[in-house]
Picture 1 (cartoon, helix red, strand yellow):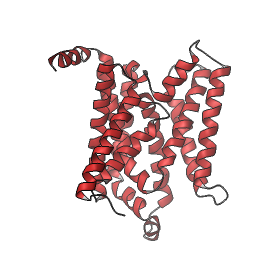
Picture 2: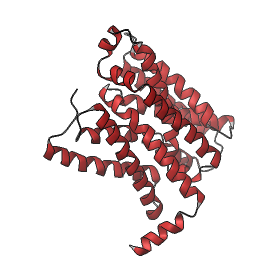
Picture 3: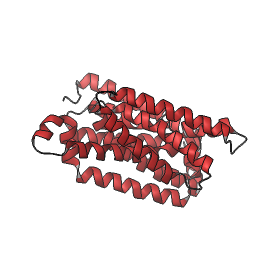
Picture 4: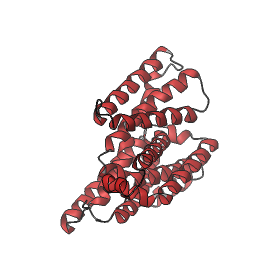
Length: 285
């Protein structure tokens, strides 16, 4: 144990480790806040779809040769989030079909562009890093950490300021609409915030594993608590702790960061599931 603590202390002296921990905590917190809303609204699949869109956007940014990919990826992902929201309200194209169409198309086009306009001799390594977040979080620059911090603060601020509206839209859109609330506007706000979270999480777990950051904390918290606020708080605490533990294990054991965090999330979910089975907990709509 002493040797492990000494090794960890040694790693903590490196800036890239501290950057990874800071960004990991911020992303985990942001992902968990809207996770409960997405799960309850049956919108979990949107996070998965937008993550594929973000992969395609990163491929476009790489082909164009942008030094900072985040602005372009954020714009494209946000636009697609709005398109998915509009498609979900279109009787001709159902929501799940629209997500499948956009996500698979973006994934295929992104990989195609990376092959045709290859900028590196190690294409499979680049794709693996983008899809699973193998090393990207350990190569963050101070500017990227600052951008992540600013966007994270904005996400948390939006959630706190519009908490009551998000709560209303989550549980009963028809009632919220009947009271005069602009349901479409707040659904749009949720979609945009989700897009921001997806872009932030790309560096942490990669595009294919982003949904885990959104879904597992929410589902785990629902095993123990019944109120929306309690589930949201528990989800945030669960997500932050799993991200911290996952990053530390990854650094010490030399395993991929994204996969390790998701593995810790799964273990945490199983623990909460067992506790919930004993206490008969769970949120009820």
